[in-house]
Image 1 (cartoon, one colour):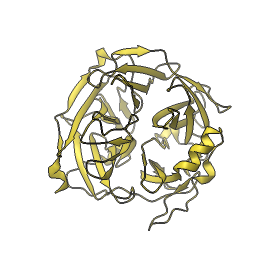
Image 2: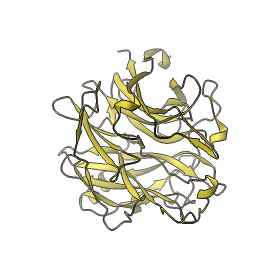
Image 3: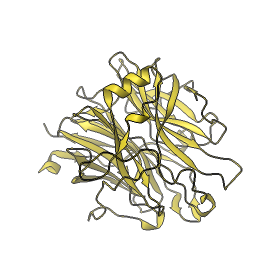
Length: 357
């Protein structure tokens, strides 16, 4: 049995709220350095700019805070609270970073302003200190028409977990929305070689992107088309909190795990972190619950995979027999309609996943 080979540690608190210098508001983009330390590029809800840059070993990843990294918005809207978030990156052989980027086009004063969320590529040629956004590649049908912010409907596309497929595609996972304002996890893909070549020329490869259509077909238009669900929603050991408005949230991370020859996707319910496993990035037939909030309160969000053995790539797009999954517990944030609670109190947590050789 596959699950018999996989061992998950007890949940460990890496940092308490009084040890953190920021309010966690996204998954971390991580890069392993030649000295074995990691760069964590992350997001501060209360900061202006939003961007934070930490460096440290896996056991103390925020040991050193560096100057915030910088963005070239490339003429896209940047007036606060709009923003760009590089939440994962692919490291090319020459060190150029291709950023999988979340973009928000919001208004700080007009609650009838459409809440627009997109995913696109960015590029860094200096190890992640400076990034340039290339352009929007993907959105949902709720962009531009959704004016329900006051009613608690935020059509957030989330992200940006990705894997490098054996077939030469990047597979990108996200929160899909349909016309009925239902939210669930789905997938899109784009050719690796061709898209990187275009991003290097600072051309937007959006024309190469397709959402999944079902039944092995990839022909759904990426900006406004609607893709189907890809994750099972009837698992006995997964606790769903329907009152929060979703089964799974895709503020998460993904990788290819060579130790089990599977793709892994880490997402959250409201108060659980779950690792799904797949052979093809579409059918996620196996899973393990990595952590459950105890007591059952607050919010579990923003998972990040970090490979810590020699089998892992520097960008953790590939991991081997030993890796961490970091995530945030917001114990005072219930995420219930009309009663969101305390979002600013964080516990930065992790579990260690080891796989038998």
